[in-house]
Length: 278
Image 1: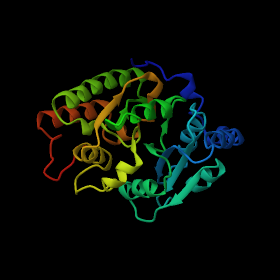
Image 2: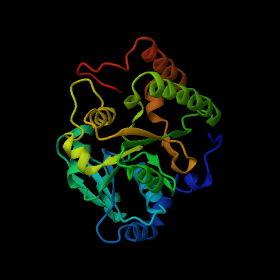
Image 3: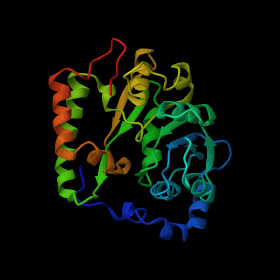
Image 4: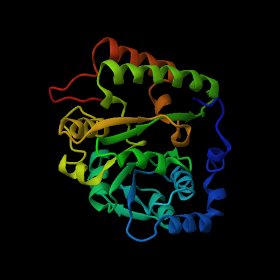
């Protein structure tokens, strides 16, 4: 099921920094509530100059509903803005990674994490309260090595939500084609996926060959090493909402969809001679 409108539980976190800073004590208390003893789950967020959006993400994660002990780690990847200060104000662990790039940042987060389960998140995405629990439950199955979920776009830059509603349904069809006939690992995105920490370390973390994407390639490695299968989570409880900035950088939703079609028609998803699943 897809939602035509952004739900209220997401909108209450989609506020300005000024508004959310007024609630900073509640956000800090939320993270204190989540971390009760040694963490079972580590949520890792790389961040580079995300002062405009990261507090929305942290606000949403602080409201997570789970009985598991959860730590949240932000990897500050040489931000020059107020990202680190905002993270500290929210009471979240913030580690530094001086090597620039998403792969180095995710590897740093994996190395620092203490949880049995690693959930990959991003600093421009808002997470529903049930996200952590719904992502972790399937990972308790020894035959499942990676979980990944769905996402929707929060409209911005004048694009109506209905346009993304249609785009998301078409993208779902493309994911079904990848999962059923092609390479499922291309469906795995770093802002909405998870795996077992021990297995991730044994698979050499997020390291990948040139031209590959770190998130899909890790999923491919974990499955190839025999740790288990990939599991697609479709429940609305785990549907995350992200900004549409990448879509507009790439020319808008229709150009993005045509690019997906081109990748399928040109067999661009199956470059496994040292290339990327992403």
